[in-house]
Image (tube, rainbow, N blue to C red; front, side, top):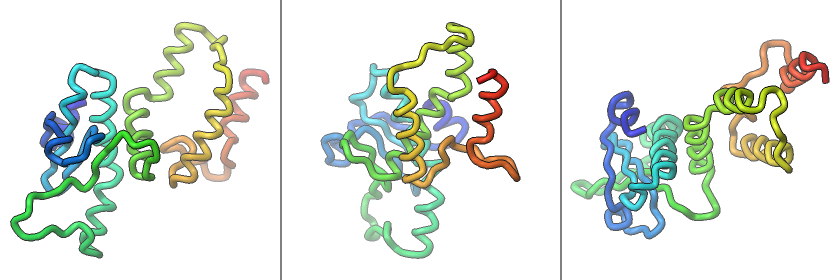
Length: 181
């Protein structure tokens, strides 16, 4: 993921003691838009999964929220600092239980980059064939996730738009018909 940050997005990437830098005890990552910098807390080194998720989460902020923050800076001076003052990160990602919409959206972005749905389904079919075992409560969790995505201003499936003249859910009905259900 850090190669995407530095190579593709051309941002500065640092692993540092963010708790010391920012002064917040439960910080995992932070993004400085003006400095084009993403930082991950050094406590995540050695924890490959959490480290990758946090980097992808910060990429999510860069891709999803930077345009909004940039527009707000033009219209309202919400993020103006004092001249000569050390710049502060615009977004600080913490381990708190109640998440703001921007944090939830960055989590969803990260999850989908690291585990794209199509790839996961393809891998499951390779292992189980068409008889993929259902997990107890999975359907309930999916519906709850769709509701959360709608409440947070996202489509039920990111990037999904019904084709012109088709209603949402029509693809699901088509797939079920093809499977003979």
